[in-house]
Image (cartoon, rainbow, N blue to C red; front, side, top):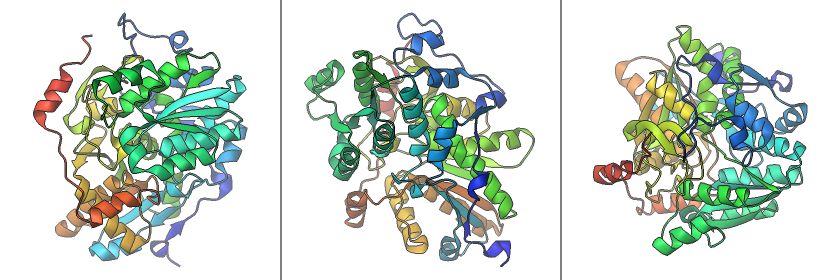
Amino acid sequence: MSRDELTKIILPEDKLPKFWYNVQADMPTPLAPPLNPVTKEPLGPADLAPIFADELIAQEVSTERFIEIPREVHEEYKKWRPSPLFRAHGLEKALDTPCKIYYKYEGVSPVGSHKLNSAIPQAFFNKIQGIKRISTETGAGQWGTALSLACKMYGIEAMVYMVRVSYNQKPYRRIFMEMYGATCVPSPSPLTESGRKALAENPDTPGTLGLAISEAVEDAVGREDTKYSLGSVLNHVCMHQSIIGQEVKLQMEMADDYPDVVIGCCGGGSNFAGIAFPFIPDKLKGKKVRLLGVEPAACPSLTRGVFAYDLGDVAGFTPLLKMQTLGHNFVPPGIHAGGLRYHGESPLVSQLFNDGLIEAKAVMQNDCFSAAQIFAQSEGIIPAPESSHAIRAAIDEALKGKEEGVSRTIVFNLSGHGHLDLAAYDNYLSGKTEDIEFPEEALQESLKTLPQV
């Protein structure tokens, strides 16, 4: 069989990377420091200690290029890693394109998404510090599910605040978490001061990731036995996810190929960073590889946000981070890609975007569902609504190649399956899914609340 006929590219288990890649070591422009939300002074590691486990703080501020994956975490990774890289022959045929399309399938993990790549090390580092309980937020439920399983692995209690609109849209995600022994409540909830305040202001609020973060941080700070855990945005989360792109590079070598464009959906930035960041050193050395983050037009932090210091949550508990933001009070519409409904983008992704090393594109909801259906019918996998954004961009790139008569190699991250998102697809098939582009006047109103730094 020729390499061009390969469908499933399996990296041997003994090639599973033993180190996480830290893009901070190679960034042309260093990150702006996180700031205290009250004093506006730079924060040090000690300031983060009430919230995060010590080793995660060390990783957050590290500029070491490679950080060793603990043996215990590496062994857990082996349950589903290395994940397969597929050549999308069926999709290529359906599009009648000369381009070659590959997708990295993270849906083979026990929880059906890439999120376990960071949940396991986060739970592990909390466990060795003696932490008994972890609080977190979740949008569509993928992160909450992953952390629930990881906490059960290490005997830690998990408390999950799930954005209300997704809690109602995706009841099976809650059940998933509860099967792993976690407690999952809709956010805003009456359990925290920030939740009670939000409910008093608007009893029918759909909730936001920023508000769920406020509740989870408030929960953690209020208890000595609890630390907080975040599933995206932060440096250490992006670093944990680098396992994805490192594997992709080895698998592309096995296929005797190299990508012209690498694509991932973008909300907080974890799965895009995971597949794209390991290609940054190549790009800095002159490789002609494009790195494309794809976001919903309803929540376009990269394409329409501003690069500024902002809070990571609504209540103001988190540090000020310099990032592409729509404003921490921004309430995105209740689109089905709940994991992408976040007002800000990872500071790492934001800085690299402003340095011109990565690109961004915003797409409409119905266009994404259309792409998901094409993919499901040609490749057999129903993708998560979040992942369908990457599929939409990959299809557009392939059709552009067809129009230009050029063969390009396209690689995208299929960050999770959509088996628990079928209600969203039912709405699409029934013609009930609306295209939503956030109005400029609402965006400008939200940006007025940015902190003055």
